[in-house]
Image (cartoon, rainbow, N blue to C red; front, side):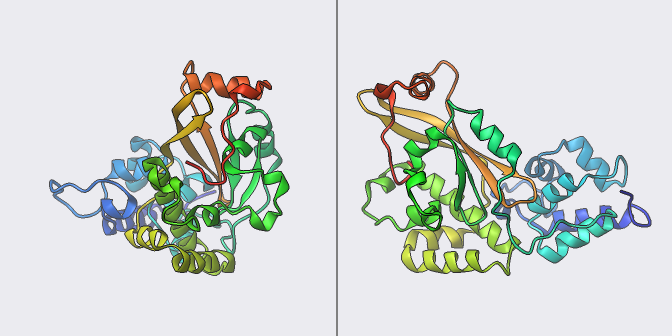
Length: 288
């Protein structure tokens, strides 16, 4: 892959897109000490998951040509529209992967990863938050998926159709997770504007849930980690991290519930994965 003509247009486009955004639009805290508009280079690098040194080289037209994975990460970080994303790839001498719709096929490598995480609840969702694949431990937190028809396995619908007085909403971690789901759906809505399933789901949730409408209007950016809580019978409440890892160019995410090594919840999950029923967490339909 080579740059078209030279790197000037590519670098200028990156700077232009960085300058048009505010920290609040991408979920970063705003400060009053900015001398220039837009995001800082460090912030774009952080959002894209690349080093600041590499990003500076890209803006200055130096260094190696970015890979398709880096270009996709930059497009997400800069909230590019479909046309802008395609233009970014064109300037880099590449062709943008299709964005006509998200993928509902989980690759064999991701399935292999799920199978090799027996002590970590983990599942894969698509751009509409349909649960596509999961390991055994995940079912104790998001319901008995095996018994459900595929059309009923939508986590966003389970969450936001819960009544406002449901105990689920009394947990700050539940509301924080709901904000992430709403923000991620908004990102998918912008990334796949012609994908009917997402459009219909967003309309449904807006009509069914005032909270979803409120979170949607905040235009927050999704964050990859949120602290969550769970209750293990006879053992009390435990905290752990819910981490979301994007699967490149599919619209999918791998969601994992991770506990600190040596912590009580990590030990309880290990025991349950080994078949100890006394360690089993409560099976819930709504994640908390």
